[in-house]
Image (cartoon, rainbow, N blue to C red):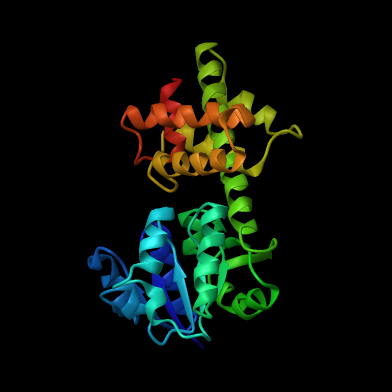
Length: 286
């Protein structure tokens, strides 16, 4: 068993930390709002006051944060950043959805301190995080991946190594972009079917028998038809990811479909749906 620290206890990070505790690891947690740590402390984790304190003595330090800015602060803050207390034998595991450019910069900063970095963003939402069924899309040195894989297996069911640092971020952005396009197209089609007085479920059941349907389409359409918009992957977060994808593309003209879908999520945020599940964009079309 290892000493593992988890930085960021949102919907995903808290569940990942809980699975590490269940797996028997010695877990220390930190969150900007310390109240988020109470359930994990009751389950056996220790709470730290800062990322620096959390990372001290850890073999592995896992971060699950909102964006590039949060990642930079949590790892590199001159006073409280986790990197300040990490030993050269420790591994940093960055599981947030970030840009490839930032991951490469972070890797360079960590290399200067003799700390290894594995980027390990995940495919899956809160149900998969709770069930330890996340899919990891990792990037980094092969030896770092091999050393870290047993830790990731406590939280995920599929651990994939896709290349050097930056590759994982690009794989995750591609995954979330395809997912977001699924969401908006299904929302528009459901709206079209309703306005056409079709039996929506019957039509979609028929489409589901064709090769164009996917498992994701089934889950997303079920949530939309049920009007279940409880947050699993909020609109405001997938809109952020679309922005990162467009940065990687270089311009909106290089990725016009992606840019158009991002605009749909932006409208949803303007309508007040930002904290609801991404499927709430269905309300724009029905």
